[in-house]
Amino acid sequence: MLTDEERATLVKYRQEKAFRVFEEAKDNAKLGHWNLAGNRLYYAVFHMAQALLLSKQITAHTHSGLIHLIGMHFIANNKLDKSYGRLISRLYELRQSGDYDDMYDATEEEVTPFFSQVESLLHDMQNIL
Image (cartoon, rainbow, N blue to C red; front, top):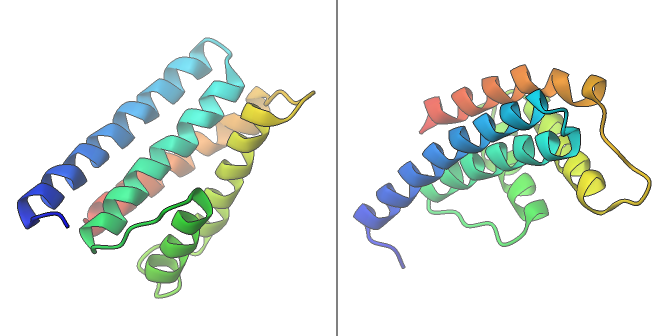
């Protein structure tokens, strides 16, 4: 069990990590590494979602659990836009495919539209915090 101070420190760290990982996504996109860019976009959202859940003393134990809990606690009650649920799921699929699927390579056209959406989601999650 975390103390309030430990929880606050960890929430702040995860927020900062989310934005650092978002920068990594942009760096990988500049290099044309679209699988890596997609991976980093997902993990930027993942880290901010972890911060958001932790701030409410909620812990996810799996990626799908995190997606479910964000949906249940923040999308279903309109604290976050419903489109974000689809976005998080799509980013998870993109990361899974880029990391594990044979004969799959993400493309610039596929990944680029996610940048502005992820940036908005990160800021909207941070505003809740």
